[in-house]
Image 1 (cartoon, rainbow over the protein chains, first blue to last red):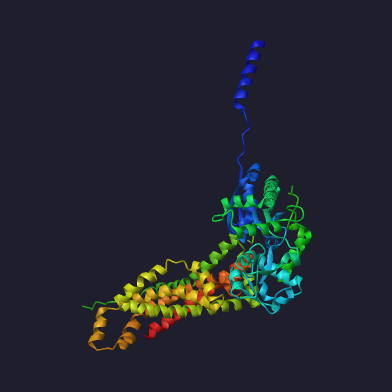
Image 2: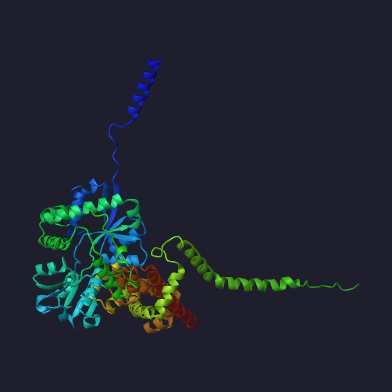
Length: 323
Length: 271
C-alpha cells in the first residue's frame, strides 16, 4: 500500500515537473506607437538613445516612432487609440477644454522653446523696439503663436503694436531677404541656421518673459488608471535618455544619425541644434512640471480667447509617475 | 331594323381622378427626395454621435449651434467672403486661360501636339504639393491663392473646350464654308453656341474645384477664409467648428454650382 502511494506520488511529481517550464516565460514587450509631433529630428535624441540603449526595452516597451502632427497625436491619445504622445504644454490645456481625457505626465523641455528673432543689424534690442515692426509668424496656431501672444502680454505689448503677418515656415528666408523685421521661431532652430548663414541675430526667448509648460509626454487617463506601470516605464526610460543626452552630446549625435535619415553625426548645424536643445532640457527636477507654469500657460490661452473657462490646473498634469 | 347603338365606355369616376393624384404625389416625392435623404442622414449621424465624445464626432445639433454662433458674430460671413474672393477670380482666370488654350488645341493639330502632352502631364502634379511653392514664390496674399484656384480649374475647362469644339458636326462646318462665313462668324454663330453646353458643364465642375483650391491654399497659411476656420477648429480640438466650416464650404460650393447651372439654362434657352 505504502509502495503504491509512493509510486503514485512520484508519478504525480514527475508529471508536474514535466509541465512546469524550466524558466518563467518572458512576457512580450508592449508595443507603443509614439506620435512625436514633428519630423524626425536631432532634438529627439533622448528618445533615440532610450531606444538604442534598451531603456524602453528594459521596461517592457517597444517604441515605434510616428512623426504625425502634434494635434493628431493628441486626438488619438484622447480617443484612446494611442496611449502616449509627445506634445507641447498648451495643447493639453486646449485638449482638456474640449473634454479630451488626457494628462501630461512628464516634462521633457524645461523651457518653452519659442523665441522672437531679429537680425542684429535691425537694432531691435528690447521687446519695446518691436513696435511698428513687421513680425512674421508661421501661422496663427501652435506653440509659436501661443508663445508670441504670451510674450506680448508679459511685455505689455498688444497685437496692434506690430504688423504681424503669416509667412508659413519660411522664417529664415523671410529675415534674410528683409521681408520682415522679426520672426517667431524656436530657440534651437532659426537663430542657429541664421548664424551659420552669416546673419547674427538678437533673440528674445519667451521663457525669459514667462514660464510656460513646454514639450513633454501626454497620456490617456484610462492608461494611467489601468496600466500605471506602463506610464512609469515610459517616463523612466525617457528621463534616462535625457540624462545620457545631456552627459554626452557627441554620442547622442551618433545615435540620432541612425534614426534621422540624412543626419550626419558630425553636422555642425545639427550639433548646434542639439546643444541648444540640451540647454532647454535642463533645470528643476527631471520630468516635473509645476502648477505655476500650467497657470501661466492657461492664462495665455484665456487671454487669447482660445480657452473660454478657467480650469483647475491640477487636471492638466500629474507628477506622480516620476521616478 | 333599328340602328346599332354605339356607346363609348366612360371611365369610372374614381379612376378619372386617380392618375392626376398619383402624378401630384410623385412630383412632390421627387421634389422632397433630396431633403428626405438629408434628414435620414442627419438622423443617422445623430444616432451614431451618441456613442462618441464631441471631439471625435459631435452631434448635428452642436454643429448647428456652432454655425449659428459664428454666423451671429460675423465670423463665418467674413471668412466666407474671403474664400469667395479667391475662388471666384480663380475660376474666371482658370476658365479664360482654359478657353484661350483649349480653342487653338481643338483647331490645330500642330498646337495640339505641342501643348497637349504637357497639359496632361501637369495633371499628374498634385496641386497640394505645389501650393507651398506658390506661397513662397508669390507670397501669402490673395494672389497666390487665386493663382492656385486657376490652376485647379484650368484642366477641366480646357478639356471641355477641346471636346466641345471638336464635337461640332463636319456637315455644319461645311455649310458655313459654303456660305463663305468668316472665321469670326464661324466662331460666333457655330462654334461658340455648339460648344457652350460642354464649356458651361466644365465651368460647373470648375466652380467646385476652385473652392477646393481656395481651401487648400488657406490650409497652408492664412489668417482668413474658411480654410483658416477649419484649421483653427482642428488646432483647438473644436470639432464642431471644423464641421461648421466644412458645411459652410459645401453650401458655398453648391451655390456656385447652382448659379452656373442657372446661367446654363438661360444660355440654352437663348442660344
